[in-house]
Length: 443
Image: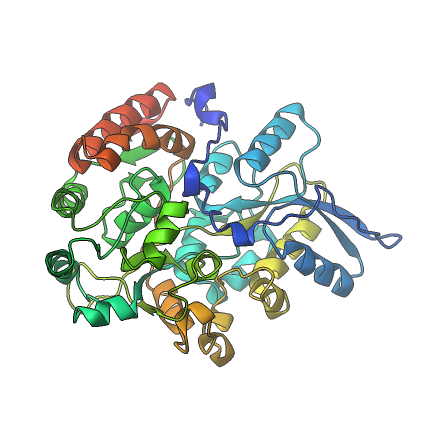
């Protein structure tokens, strides 16, 4: 990677809105920066940085069952704040943790700086069979595995059953059917939209592009990067959504805004393309429609196919600077890949959605209910989606993607620009940026 400029090796990481994948505030811990942990004499002391709710409980369970290792959890800020501190500590040559919670889309930015340890020599591949494929692919580069998957965010069509029933609409199985249903609903009730999609937030849009086979990046390590917002699949995706936007048959209310919660609760938005962590946070923010919401598979590009995108999720990575890689790897693998850990992580405090297949397949998990979904075993739908996610190849320039996106797509949000035009702008700007950082770019 010596050909790359210093700019490509700097982690000026910027999260935008829900771009971090940690958007569900219900999963953000509110604990103090440093948890007090009394380590046993002689135990190997490790430091972990993480912010998600419930992680402290899992760490405590590990320490109780692993007498020779002591993990101290520190909350040094969520997402961008943590990543910046890791970058600064790495540059300084001291102060970095042994392990850190790192989201999937950020991993390549750390991999390209050689900041993460390859866990293969420490037995991580023994856990591969128990992890959903899309999670494993996002922590792997070539023969290396640079983090242990924890949670994921498979998408499902999450709809208000009362509204759809009122207008005789069943959950659409294809995107062609979705467009027809959106037009029918708008004709029958001009004040109601079938769905909403926030175009200023890159993560849900990129998740939808994954699902449609139109993800615009390819990167498999090294100095070659493919950027393609203007290919046939990407252009088809843009054209499809622009037609719906132009006709006013879907809207683009900002994610996690009061206006979005109100639209769902007032039944002016009938559905959302929800990640698996969505219902838990959603039921904290609506009141009148609790019990009416149901999960269905995402509309598919063609009849008979089952496909989902992934929005969100974190990993546990071991930093290359750790002086205790063996013990740190043992913790990371336990945290993401054991029933003992997932009993806590999937509980009511943490609420993480598992990449861990034994839990996804368990009858107790599949029979879970929530007040927002009434008696529906909604987790069964999300669990099926988790096994059919289209894996993305995140580029090591996601900081620039997140920085540019809200400005480039502001015109799509206010109706002054088309999706196709925004895609062309992203293509030109990102290609210019990537080349300036020393990447060989294909388009």
